[in-house]
Length: 456
Image (cartoon, rainbow, N blue to C red; front, side, top):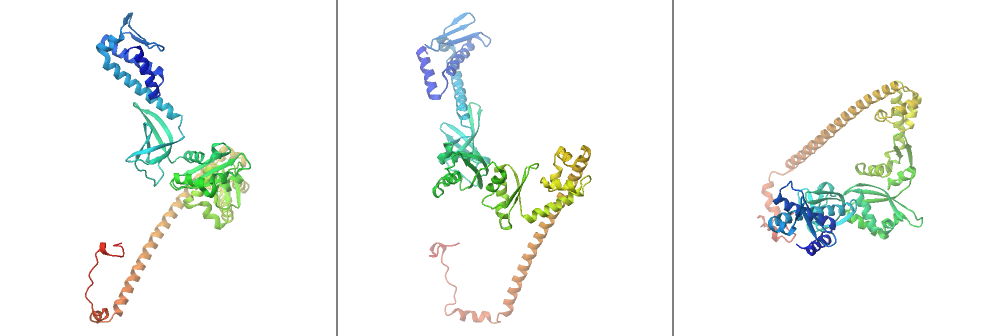
């Protein structure tokens, strides 16, 4: 290996593996040192230096100059090769880590290679990334050679290789897809202010525009919904609500609860809670299936949203004032102040900041501790009662189901008995005459020859 070969090797590895030339030079120097120590001993003071300009190699052991060709040719060719390969692999791995670290939280396209248990392996150029089941959209399956887009979430070394973890469940994925499909977002005219997501089911996206002439919601939806359809298709049919962002919670909270119509929003600053009043016919729509709509809306706007009707609010207020007033050291005036700040249950009162309660009621720290302790005890009792009532309700429902099934069986038996009693005694004798001349059993048609389509 002469000087020109050294430079050729360095340049080739630099271009093919995207490895810095200095790293390759150091790898070769380290390989020469390792090879020489096989002969001179591990404690020997050995050094090799490669000229970065002309590729000339100079070596020494202590004060004695070494001929690197003699060192490699006589004792260390295999050792030098192994060290160089190892160093190059480590350098390639480090280069790949730097490359993928730059695209963490960015969208990347790859090809599904295989499925192993709960992990899907995806090929990204020369790298194999993993898509864990926990990061896959529920109900979605991927087949080998399928093109897939996912978010890069984690990059770290794993031996001489790189471990890249992908995700299709993060809210950031929705944002990246919007940026790809909607030019106004990529150009910065429209901004995505917040996203809340339950993968595979529903997402809410809050957007705003810096140009009053651009309708942020309409631009994201596209003509006849063509833009949002591209995103929905990529997310396996996940429903996406696009709402207009506003800094004012009084406007943002109703927007986030769309498509439900909101009558009034009451903000409880101390609790970080928003009580949203709706009509009876809008209650189930505002809450959503299994609470999904209100849950996503709460995450989107950062408020703990509680949906109720005007009548329910009045009942809760009356119960809260009455319950708080029964606590030691809490008079009706303080109870009303607590309700006015959004504290509507013993649970709420058990987590109040002591300083806030001291200020509101002009109380001492000891008095506040007494009130909070009593509220916690009552909250625990209320929770136990609720659990017991739920258990009794489940047992009642189970018993009602059993009674209904028993009644249906009894009804069926009675109907059958009535048919038997009303049947004539000579039924068996007159049956052939009712069937006509051919009373013999008909030949059964095989399923595969049945023109009606076979068995069901």
